[in-house]
Image (cartoon, rainbow, N blue to C red; front, side, top):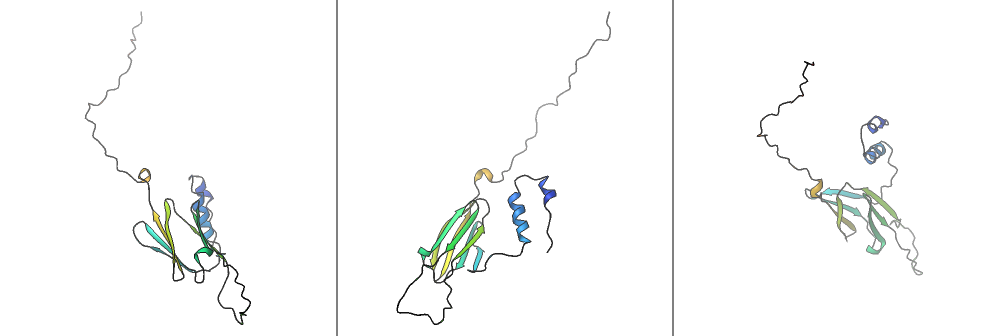
Amino acid sequence: MRHVDFSPLYRSTVGFDRLFTMLDSLGQPDQSQSYPPYNIERTGDNTYRITMAVAGFDESELSIEAREHTLTVKGEKSEEQTAENQFLYRGIAKRAFERRFQLAEYVEIRSASLKNGLLHIDLLREIPEAAKPRRIEISAAQSAPKQIEANHVDASVN
């Protein structure tokens, strides 16, 4: 894939640096890990849900943090030391993970729940009234048209 140069757009836009950085990173090969798998779904007009498969993790081993339009989900397994059990084969991963999601403006985390090995994070996009578009009525002017007045200079000077 080719690299796209956004520098001409920087000359005529203000405040879109984050968008251009995100678009530029789309062209890069995916450096992130694929564990744990997740879904992002739209559940309503302004509601969303992120579902992550975190089988084997307890609520105390997961943390969710939202900061500056970034949602971070971390999982870290506590080491279990059992003297009587010895693993002959360990196929269930106990690896720690950190997954980041970029959130749009005005997206808030409403709730998080863990059920049957699935972590559900419910999100709501709530646009404040001041940021919503509003319709402005145009009224017809009822007054008479204004005339241009000029100062006349008398050309007849004695």
